Length: 263
Length: 188
Image (cartoon, rainbow over all chains, first blue to last red; front, top):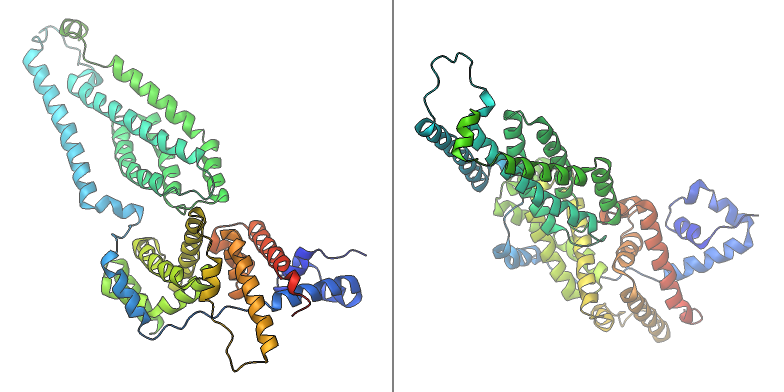
């Protein structure tokens, strides 16, 4: 005859069905298990619920008085972060920076470039204008920096132990989500689709990190890590970051003579 | 307060209306204290947990889904704040078994006979001492199962554990408590 383990009997005591078995019926016919269950039940029955000290009707008000001056700023859902004044200001500043770089590039090229040959009828290639180069360089630098920061957060999460506090990483991730969206849109506008795809994948993992409890359990961390691994995200972030740095170096302003020669 | 009023108060609180949040604090503090006391076994710790839980709840109100019950959500926060506090207390090597017991209400004098009272007090002492030796998760899982009557599935959701991990926390806690009570079997 198969007997029930202590764990099964504990589950039965608490009204949880152990592996779908009919424990009650078994206990009626098995003296050994019945005796074990009686002992278990006796032990657990003497553990009575401790009575909490009484708190009066005004207790809620007392708690309120103690915490009212300590209330922190509310954490908003990720999408509402777009509309926070500081984030809007940051996005605005970034746009102004891009615009300034574009205008400066146009002005610089207009002031220094030689007059176009009259005989030439071929239109200049769109991507080769210095203004666009400047904008492109800023985008490359910004996205490469962004990927560096994201890599640090992902690496931290990959190395965090279960039960540890990941609230710092979550705050970083939350900030990175906002900038990631901006860069992704810029990448799409600039025709950098492979960059946009990696930023999109990155954004999903960052969102998952933000929405995990700050005391992440082993199960939570496994889930996040599994997704990061499945998408080879860390690898892609590293490779793209290094590729952008390389392109950034290649696209750096060359001596004027060379630049005019090639135009 | 009916469901519509509760929803309206919650909506205002989520928009940062501190007066609306005050209504929630006044309404849920006593229940939060009871749970915190059972989880920590100490009156002062329970007070700290209640305060920290409401502060944490206020900070995270934006993430609270209106369809959920605020009481259930707060219950989860109180349980997790209690675990954090027990962990930090452990980290300070501040095992408060004596204090825990001191804060437990003693049997009333007009109850059963003196021998039975003495035995009962001895059991409470042993249980309090054994509870203070449990790991924070074992203690939380046992408290929620044994004292609060929560199901394994609910406890898992509250503590962010899988079913198997939740069950094993309860099993380990029961085994340790039974071992602590073993010497008293003849007396009870």
